[in-house]
Amino acid sequence: MKNDTRENFGSKLGAVLAAAGSAVGLGNIWRFPIETGQNGGAAFIIVYIACVLLLGIPIMMSEFFIGRHTHTNTAGAYRKLAPGTQWKWVGRLGVLSGFVILSYYSVVAGWTAEYTVLAVGNCFEGKGPDTFPAIFGEFVSNPWKPLVWMFAFMIVTHVIVVRGVKGGIEKFSKVMMPALFVIMLVLTVCSVMLPGASEGLEFLLKPDFGKITGSTVLSAMGQAFFSLSLGLGCLCTYGSYFRSDTNIGKTALNVALIDTFVAVMSGFIIFPAVFNAGYAISSNDIGPSLLFITMPNVFQQAFGSMPVLSYLVSVLFYFLLVVAALTSTISMHEVVTAYVSEEFGMNRRRAAAIVTVACSVVGVFCSLSFGPLDGARLFGMSLFDLFDYVASNIFLPVGGMFVSIFTGWYLDKRLMRDEITNHGTLRVPYLRLVVFILRYFAPIAIGVILFNQLGLFRLF
Ligand code: PHE
Image 1 (spheres, rainbow, N blue to C red):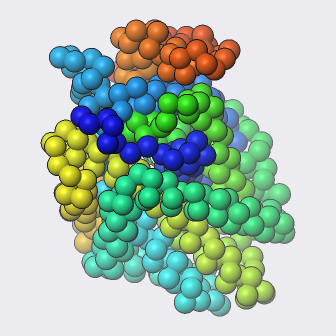
Image 2 (image 1 turned 180 degrees about the vertical axis):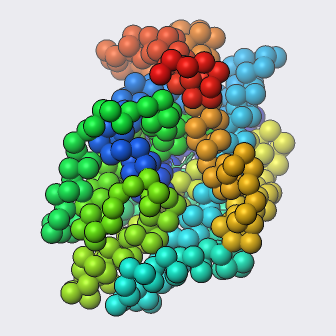
Image 3 (image 1 turned 90 degrees about the vertical axis):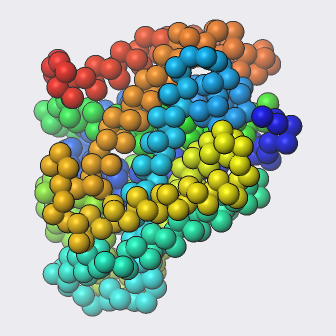
């Protein structure tokens, strides 16, 4: 591999924003509220935050330093660090996860684009609660419309990935991440000021620990991995573009903080507004449609008497989703593209084209599972749900478990110390804690949660 010709992020801020761009996405604004709603609110959020702190940050640091040390794609990184062993499969599992997630993620990303257009065209104005399920239902079951948007999304992602790391990914993230933050702040203020918002706030802030079960814990862990883009080598690939003076611990902490903040902020945007509009929170009402049926109605009900505000808020909201989704699809695409290009010695353009076409083909089936393939079930789930469940709740935690075993047990301790302290130039007082987590806590905790939930044994 020609390390000297490989691109790097141009600045430390660029690196943080690109990684945060990967982490912040539909996982925060679409999936987090759904999981929170289905798993009982505040108690879920507490378990989620524990997973981010105790598992997410140390594993993110591992991915970063594996990437930066090897300067290559995720599968190549394991091959370099553990030549002739089976560790390369961890990298390959990551590439497969990236491929699977990108395929169904771009379907929802496409929906956000359609809804942005609807919002811009002022199509929600004056509509009542009964119309939104029909609008959404008609759209997703239309055989071609969601597909066109999915392809469009895939193509934009493709173009940015082909432009490369500094000119494409970093530049885009540097503009879009701050913009996203501002939009979210505006929306949060609007939402918490609504009449009746306090019920929503209570749901988010008052934990009922009786609601925590094995499946809550698995969902919180899966959500943490999904939201932080962990366990599939995405951040390992981004780490490979870090410069040698990037502070890995600080970057991981910043990314985790930004990501968690945005997720919680989404909760503050969505739940007060949902309660204000009089929707009951029960797991049956909350699903992929939360943002597409509930939210447009919320905008009408909450701001209906102020049409201009209602218009602006809806446009901002869906535009925000598009941006957040795009910085994430780019990162998934990059994992698979870097793999195909570097492992098969292909130029980036060609590798990216192959990835785009292959993901689009699989994406078609995920998209159609809301329409013509609606009745098709595998293990009792639609293809879309199955992909989401398997990738987030199984592949990503398994990937994360192997990353922690690899760095905690297989790699030479000095390598980790050198990378995290930038060869002794940084003081990292929490290094021993990170090592302890990676060696003992993370593999055991992830293993127990996974096996418990998969029914291999039952502890709780
Ligand atoms: N973290 C992204 C989000 O929250 C999704 C993602 C998962 C991106 C895995 C890359 C890898 O939307």
